[in-house]
Image (tube, rainbow, N blue to C red; front, side, top):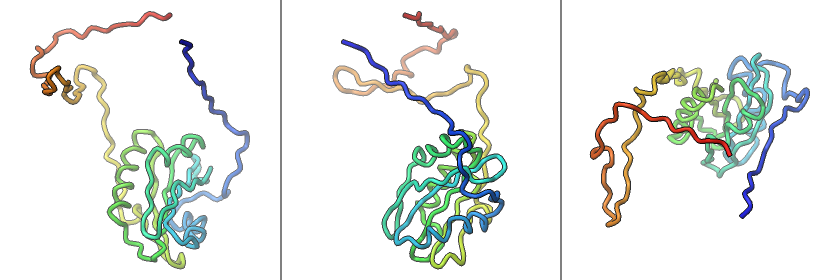
Length: 196
């Protein structure tokens, strides 16, 4: 049997065109850039504006187009364009066609999830802005002081890492806690695989 491994490559496009040469320094700047377009749509749309170090937009990606009152997006889809654009930060914008700018439970969950994941990836979420109606007002998570990073600390000593208990299925179908039967190990053996 022949073994195959597909190889993919990522290349930067020389002098990638910018959406705007003006840095986004406030929610108003972001709303002015793309809010009118989002408010003109008849359904919820979530987009991410990927920013360069100087705050200038590198790209915009319409991540998800939903129904009149909901839009589903997964973080992997949001981060895809940010990574490919070499973004140093990002802003989420989405529309509420009803004009009600109050964040839904789902809006809050995706904001919290993106906030935590963006810190781990090193592409911070600068703001999540909701626009709607005639684009004359907006809701900014940043302006409401809702976006606050926890600044997770990472373990530097592998001896202090704690992993969830491993569970295995026995032959008779009963699950048993493996960790409770094993004695704590004093030494950790490192196995090295020889190259072929």
